[in-house]
Image 1 (cartoon, rainbow, N blue to C red):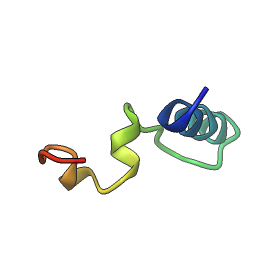
Image 2: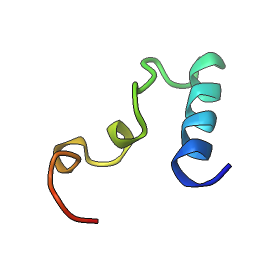
Image 3: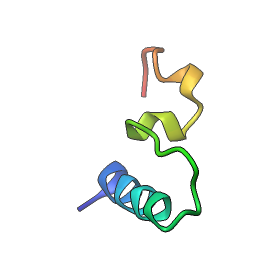
Length: 41
């Protein structure tokens, strides 16, 4: 597993452990959600 998949796996673990109240639905929710809809890399 690489990149975003690893991050989501970790975040979902943290959610199950009770450290994160609301689990994100996709990895881009974790990183400046307002920029996710913009073009570019």
